Each structure stands twice: as structure tokens, then as C-alpha cells.
Image (cartoon, rainbow, N blue to C red):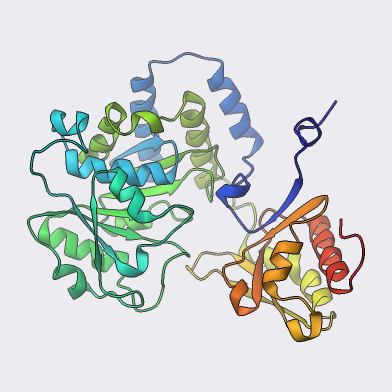
Length: 375
């Protein structure tokens, strides 16, 4: 039988960059795949499906309410629209064109106004909001946010992500305290985070997750939170949420993935990742001009990675050169390249087998040593 790669002339990929949208994010468990297939072949009253799977998820996570959306970025846009529109039918239908006054300012720590593959500000704008940056790129304290609160403030948005500046930033709990003090909704974008309860428990009104990253579900997103706030998000299915709708298979697949995520052991711990990549690191360190070591996730998740540094004076190739060259050939290897300008890349091994680590090593060695064929 002809493979997908052959049929469409696609290049095979080794994903050493992590749960990245540009590579298809993750590979769900067989039980999730089976649930998706079952859902595709049945009919439902979709509102009933949305409500009842949402309540099932809420009960699993011990939160007030939940809803499955098409992805985390759609969750941001719909959450922002939800807290602006609330139950106003005119605004629901005319979010971007209504002349009606309504608070639209969304306060975001400046170091959180990042590009995660698309700009945070674009998602806020799509939801009818106006970004107001608090603090500085490398610092945001509670008083920076408090000083910006006014009658036009609709919500505070906190982005919990490795993309964001981590140092000198107030915590989710501190932000929740401010939101509660001024009776303003707090939205937390926790797309790739592994803990599905902490930020809600710390006081967030809405928390947004990617369904396909840590949870390893199909392409989807999850919004959990306070009863009324989530209902406002659901209502956006009649407004800006319509072109972002999630299918029955996505709703059921993510619900099953969450169930497995909280009841089954984690498929690979950080220490198991270290054990898997230790031989890989040792072999890399034997190549002149390359140094590799274990590093841990900057956002505090239980994820270990191999940080690989390239001394261009010795190897003849910079880290940026290697990022480009590793994508060439029959098998494309993708690293986390956020620090390539500093001469290093990270290899995320969560979706990489031991055999694939050997392929990565051999490809690096071949490039450095000038081999004519690099797979």
C-alpha cells in the first residue's frame, strides 16, 4: 500500500522541536484515534454534545465549566470576545462594527505580548479587544497592572508560555488577586502547559489549553473556568466563533484524551527523557566543536532537552547553518531554534525514538565532516 509520504511526495520529518503546530503538534494515543473515528460516523445535537462533554470535562478537572474549541488561539479570541460581549446580542452579531460603548481594553504584561506562531495582539483584536501593555519587556509588577485599570478595562490576559519573558514577572496568583480586587475577569493562556487545574485554582476566570500539545488530543483547544464566563465563550459560536468551530470528532477526541491524560501515567517523565538522550549527548560531545548538555524547560514543566552548541570556528557551521542544513535531504530534522542566534539549539526528545536520535547524530556528524550525503 502506498504511504502518505509517497502519495503526496511529502518529506519525512523527525520532530526534535517539541509539540509544534508547524509539524502537526503530537500523535494521540490509539484510544483517542478510535474515539475520533467513532464520532465521525455518528450524528449528534451539537449544542447538547458541547454542553455535556463540557460538563464531563469540568467534573474530571473539578472546575465549574468547560468547552472544547478548535485550538488554543481560537480560545484566546473567543475568551476575549466573551468577556466583552457577555450576553449582548447586538455586540454578538456586530462585535467589530457596533457603535455601542463597551469596555474593550485587555491588559497584558508587555513581556507576554509575544508571537507564538501568530501575535497575541492579533488574537485579542480578533476578539474585539484592544491590547494595553503593562510594565516592560523584562519586568511587570502588580502595580504596573493596577495603574492601568480604568472603566475601559474588560479583562487581564496572562500568557503562561516558554515564549514569554520569565524573569521579573508577576505570577498568575498575583494577577488573579488584582483581578478579584477590581472585579475584572482574568484570562490565562496556558496553551502548552501540563497542569490542567493550577491556574483555575489560583483564581483565573478562564484558562485556555491546546488540546493537541501536552494533552495529546486531536487538533482542538480547551477552555475551562467559571460557569458564566465559559457560557459567554460558548455563545461566541453564534458570532466570531462560527468560523472557528470544532467538529464532533474533535470534541469527542479531546474529551477522551483529557480522560486518559488525568487517569493514565505520564508517557515519559523528564528523567526518562534524560536517560534516553544521554548516549546521544555523549556521542555529540565527542565531535570537535560541539558541546551538548541536558537543560530543563524554561517555563518549569517536567521536560528535559538536549542543548547543542556549535563553535563555528571549529565546525565551520553556525547553529543557524545547522538549523537550515538539518532540514535538507530525505529526512528533515527540526530543532527548537529559538537560541540559534546564540550558537545553540535544543533537541526535544518527547516525540523522538532512540533510533531517530541515532539518525540525528549521524546527520550532524555528516554535515560537520562534510559528507556528500546527509540522509
